[in-house]
Length: 252
Image (cartoon, rainbow, N blue to C red; front, top):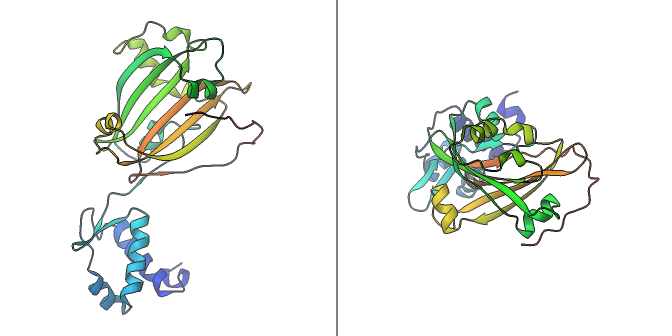
């Protein structure tokens, strides 16, 4: 179906054409779009209509408008789903991205009150924490922290960074995804520590996805926290899991 048949308004037709120019590579990443005056003349429309279309493209992360300089094509956002049915690595590979994971840290520690409530830990407060930084196309994409109760993963005791057993465990991370999960999403701003890991400035907007994975008996088996760049990521959610579990009260 043509764009003319799908779009009944001038605004829709203009937006469709601009999106197609970006999607097909007519306007490449970093390239400057025609000025507002040029777009007004090309489409024979008002400045306010052109600005409303550009605002929507800005909102979707396709372009970035800089006052006094114009609008520029941005890197497309990376679309991923929470890693319940498929790991982040598998999703990126299927989409043809060049992906690499770097293991930053691995240690055993006493669980915080927040994580203890997520994992329903009462008797054994010890957890293993595994932290990874993932790169896409050579650029930092996300920071992943995985929390595993010691009582469920005793085989990880004594492992250290660089151990082949730890590397093997990471390669088979899909084995701990569980039968079901709950997700929590919020926006926050990068702390000095996180900004260094993500290679962004302090205060940079991030998306934090928190996920609790459950086994077939509905017992929590892992907690995952992932920090994404807010301007580079679009998360997809599928709401097909029965809401039979009561809400968990989390205290910061």
